[in-house]
Length: 495
Ligand SMILES: [Zn+2]
Image (cartoon, rainbow, N blue to C red; front, side):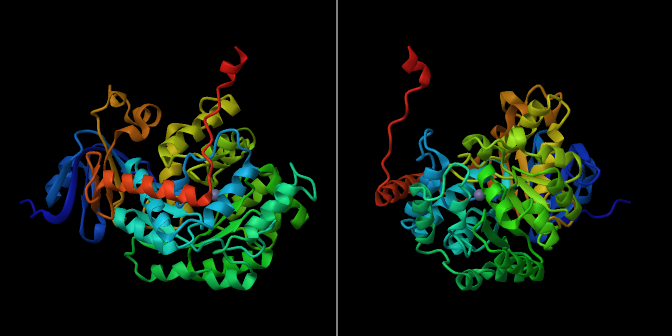
């Protein structure tokens, strides 16, 4: 005699379910049962799950891939109103100059809210269900408000935790000599960031304010400790941030070894390889996630592996500005040696798109090309970095990153109704090389259907896009931003 089916809130049936559990289980004819509070009740073969559970609502995946939502680990969510405003011929020091000073002294809370709203919509549309903000939204409450409105899981930190903002400019010493006017202007701008902390005491006063969100175990928006890094934090502040993250059992997220210049500046101030020094002081740890980490020595790779520290690899950001992370980065090698590697999109002018499928694909492709080895990284590696790797790097590995009973139901369902998804010989290769985010169809976060058949269920997309354009034009005008004509392609000039 068969037992009465148990009650579920939602059933996803007839999916090619990529669980990303420890055994990398795939249910080719799979189903997922979702219960109260957005928890996954069961994952398995469709016949079994559909016999065991009955639900008020069923979504038919029609044979398409179903996978855990991607986790974005390095993202500046407040620059979306400024996306695309930096012409391709701009050098990076001038770019920082523009956006740091002019942008931050003109952006309003409402601008930040709209920016993060757009960022969240873009991420969900591309199959990302959780993101960790890099600590540069001046009013983190705006990031939280936008994330909740879209229904995306967010891990937010306090803005500009630094106590020596002028340290940022010191990272430019490779290209600029002492007394350089650009460096001086940059240092001034950083200290003139009106709403950012100026002193150690001010940094400490604003550090950790987002951690109160963690009191609610079901909170969609949680807090972590963000430090800007790249020479802008004293060692004292870094250790205080580490103690704060340890006490709260959260991730400490900091930029590290982004360009050759800031890496050299850190090597100079620490008197040795930066990560080796941070290992010796006890900063390097399992709950630390470095954004970028493009330039590491052999010794630094060893200590990173020893401590289990995560890296949010942002391949497009490096490619966009020519920092050489594909050529010189150790991410792929570290991954093969067992390091915790996640992925990040950085910002709307440092990759310009918040699509982790693209980041994963770029990471895998670049590694193969540089190592001249097709098998150096495979599609499955990229998907792992975007799911389990990301969950660990943001400190939510017990909640997200895989489809397993007890975890939060953050789930992406694709469609086979796209040319890139047929023939269905191999779903993983179709997804990773052909369709990527293009086939994202329905997105569920915390058990709620946020995106259904490509449309947001509770947002007026067109109205939001119109508002974003209006606010962006107003912001650029306040910044005195001069929109330059697009450059003529070099080929046209040589003819
Ligand atoms: Zn960053």
